Length: 191
Image (cartoon, rainbow, N blue to C red; front, side, top):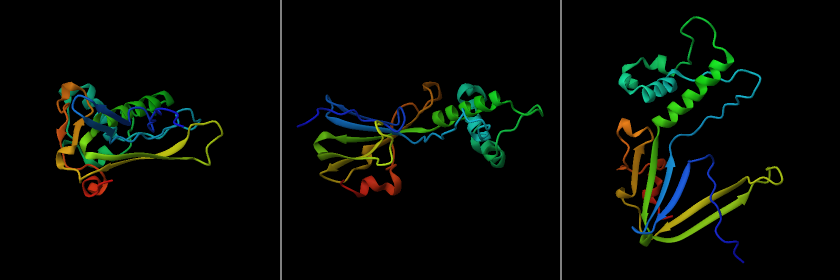
C-alpha cells in the first residue's frame, strides 16, 4: 500500500523547490545555481581564506552605492585570496567572518533558475530512489532522481531566471532565458 505523500528533501535548504500552481495548471521547478562550499569552521586548523571576488560581491550587495563590476577590478586580484589591509594577520574570528561574508556574497550574486511546465504537457512523473549503502544506520541519506516525462520537447518559454539579490538591485523578476540545463539537455529530451 501507499505510505501517502512523501516530503522532498533538498541537498541544502532552498536548493530545490517544486510546486504546482493549480489556478494556472502549471508545475514550477526552481533551483539555485549557487553551490555552497563546505567550510569546517569547527576544525582546529584555520578555515581557508575566501577570494576577493566573493568578498567584493558581498560589499556590492550591502553597499550598492559603491557597486563595482567585476570587469572594473583587476581579475588577478579578484581571484586571489583575501589578505589583511593593516599588515597584521587575520585572527581566527576574522577568517570565520570573512568566510560567512563570502558565502553570502556568492549566494546573493547567483541566479534562481526556473523550469515551467504546463500540467497538460506532463505525461508521466516518477521518483526513483535508492538507499545509500554507506550511510549510518538510522540516517535519511538516500539518493533520488525525479523523472518528468513530457509529451513534446520543451520550448524556450519554459526556462526563466532571476537574480537572487535583493529587490533594490533590480533583476528581481523572472525573465525568459535559454535552456540553463547542462548542454541544454532539457530542450533535447522528452524525459
